[in-house]
Image 1 (spheres, rainbow, N blue to C red):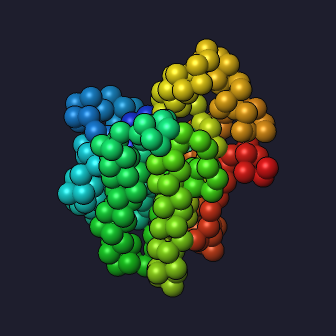
Image 2: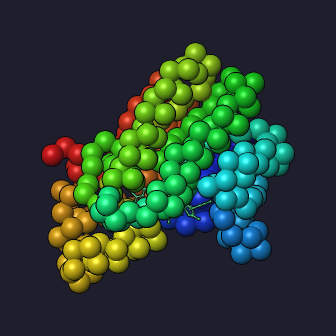
Image 3: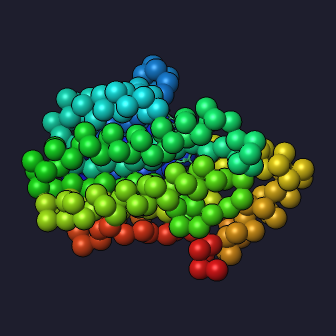
Length: 260
Ligand code: NAD
């Protein structure tokens, strides 16, 4: 479905980003993986994906908290593949704490990775997409882009920002064959959530199994985690030609969470 396309997936060495990268590769796209660790650490993963999918897969180290590094990641993708047709802004961090106890430097870091990096990669990638008259931007926001939870004010603010940014970009490029959407998962069991279980256990003073049942999945009517592969399949659809009219949208994959 995506043969001949090139894709950059930020934060793609684990969790949702890895699932999306794998699904795009299986759909035929050349994929640039990204993480903050050195290339040698990701080499086994890169080689595995390339062999499994039979496409070119590369890896670039970038610290997305640094604007220059975010822009260099897009430049590295264009240098490797000639273009960046698909941009998946996935990298993100979470920190759970009451607002009045939230560390200032963690707020700065969270906004830099969750929001500013999305701006910098999008800005850097759009000229390549405009030149081809085809592009797909999928911003992995969250159900927290639409609703809020206590002890997650900075994360909620960051994901609402990503939703708004996605809509505005979509409007700007609507006549140029480029779509931009926010994909909003509910709870997906990934390393990010494992850390949150530990943090929430501290905040609520509860054992971790009770936190999963009574705090985390309390919000999700299906009482099941969303699977990373399900988010990935949705992202691949948004990158397809069949989804060319889907733009500026907020797509929820949240087990019914936001229907309440
Ligand atoms: P994860 O921790 O497994 O993956 C996050 C990725 O971001 C990792 O690959 C990590 O290396 C990368 N990353 C973090 N900081 C970085 C930096 N400074 N530079 C480069 N890369 C960096 O988490 P995940 O759950 O797969 O989350 C992926 C995205 O999905 C995030 O934006 C998150 O907010 C969003 N999300 C997750 C859930 C969930 O329940 N897991 C729900 C909704 C939205």
